[in-house]
Image (cartoon, rainbow, N blue to C red):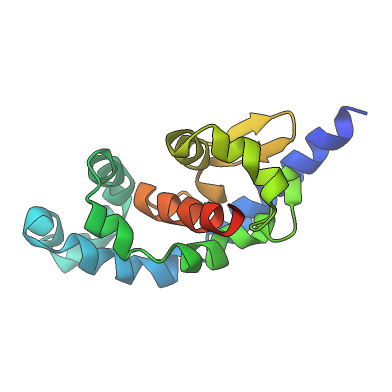
Length: 159
């Protein structure tokens, strides 16, 4: 019996990994202008010839931005859009135990753990008794702030 949930979890993780690779194309341009204000100007100055290197360095730069998120930056990210592009693949159907937005009974114990725990599980991933959450919803290019906005969107739908 325990092999079935493991197989479902593995299948969901593979599905998310494959699907998550398409979403960053639409989000990458939106993320760059948000990072362009004076605080981030040195990162934007990379020459065009080094664009592949800049793309490789982006995941390393994301945690530095996420360590001290500004309320205005997080608020400017559309959590519904992030949800629709990535999170809905599992959460809309309840794949691998993903709670559906609006399912107050299923979200209540998760919400009770606190926002920071929800953020941590969405960013780092989590495996529990009722299912699993792959890190960043299976899309490693999503920023911490995008993940937080998506969590905030789902929680707001589920209170």
